[in-house]
Length: 267
Image (cartoon, rainbow, N blue to C red; front, side, top):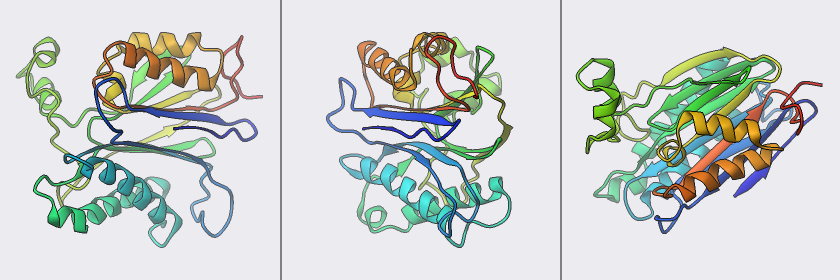
């Protein structure tokens, strides 16, 4: 699925593909422009998210879609109170409980769950709430920075000094999650607050992209792309050609409008 929604001086694009190995897509993406009104109590401009479901058969596909749906409903309703970070965090926790208490969870031997990485943007204010090993990146002045940390056993062991990054890359349990939406009533998401600048690029993606491509290649493909949609297509195509071991999903948000010859810029 591809969806683009430019508005004035803001533009973003999303793409999600099955990849070369999986039979169906358990990822879900959200990239929406929100207008003023009663269904937007926080006054959001943009809501973007990626989710990578797990649970076997169609449970993963259900979990990622359910998390996105619960996130939207929470931010459009009574849970949308307080500051932006608080409201988005509450929305992720609401999605967590929705999956935990669902009929699908009660009847499933393998409990459904999902990663969830969310970016809510209001003017230059951006709140990122994250669970799992999907990622958020920022490209500013041509420099790509990973904003989120993977909630995996390997990442925890790297941070504690028990494994080197090289050892973790070859470890059989490297991708095992320690957090997921739908896994625990005591879920604690990671929360970041950003102040966006003109020409910033925000990237949300599932591990089907980052498991196949280095950060340097991701950066190069974005810089070399003539448009926002072409950047998404180039990233997904490169990950697929590199093996396509998993579903591949990406959302690119430009705090400006894409200029093919000069990069993204605010008018």
